[in-house]
Image (cartoon, rainbow, N blue to C red; front, side, top):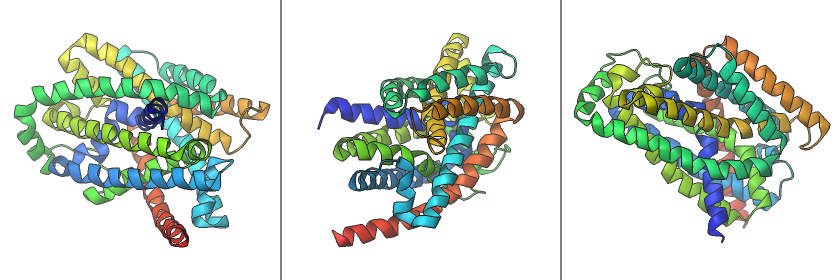
Length: 356
C-alpha cells in the first residue's frame, strides 16, 4: 500500500464528512450535544454505521467494478428498490448541497455582515468550477484540505472545552433537564439520533466510495476511511464537550462554532469563519457532483450545463429557506431512510460472504 494514497483517501473522507453542519457545529449540536450526558451513545452508533457501510461500499464497488457509483444500490436492493435508492440518494445529495449553500450564506451574514445571498453565490461558484473537473479532481482537492480543516476545528473546540471545563457538569445538567429548547434529532432517543446521523451519511458516501472503490486499491481506500473514523468522531466528541461546557451561549446560536471562536478572540472568529467556509466547500463539491452525475455523464456539455444550473438553483433556495430548519428536516428524514438501506446491505453482504 502507498501511505500517500492512504492519507489522501483519509483526507478525502474527512473533507467530505465535514460540511456545513459539522464545520458550523450546528449538526453536532442537534444530533449529539443536545443529548447532554448521553452524547457518547450517538457518536458510538454513528461511528459503527460509518465504518461498516463504507467498508461495504468500497468492497462491493471494487468487486463489481462499477462504472457508475450509484449502481451500488441495485447490488444491494435489486433492480426496482435499487433504482429508487439510486435516484433518491442523488436527490438527497443535491438537497444536502443546498444545505451547504445555506450554511455558507448564514456564516457570511452572521460573521461578516454580508447581504443575504452573497455567501451562497461565492460557494456555488467555487463548487461548480471544481465539480466540472470531475471525481478525480474532487478527490485530490479534498485530500489536501480535509486534515487541515479538522486540525483547526479541533484547536478551537479543545481550547473551548478546556476553558469551560469547570462548567461542564452544570452544562450537562442544563441539557439533560431541558433548561434550553434545543433543536434535536431523534425525539429524545440517542440511539435513534445515532441511527439517523449514520443514515444520512450513508446516502452521501454510497456512490462516492462505491465509485472510488471500483477505481482504486480497496485496501488503501478502506485503511484511509478507517483512519478518518478516528479523526472525525474524536473531534465530534471534543466539539460536544465544548458546546455543552458553553451551553449558555451556544444553545441558540445559528453558527455555534463562531460563537466559541468569538469567545476566544474576535480575530480568531474571523479566521474561523474562513475555515468554516472551506469546510462547507469540501463537502459541497462531491454532493453536487453526485446529484448531477445521475442525470448526465461526467465531462459532457450536458453535465457542465446541469452543474451550472444546479449550483444556481441551490443559491436561490438557500437564500429563502432558513438554514437551521433546512438542515434539521433534510438530514433527519433522509437519515432514517438511509438506515433502512442498512438492512438490505447486511442481507447482501452475508449472502456474498457465504458464497465466497
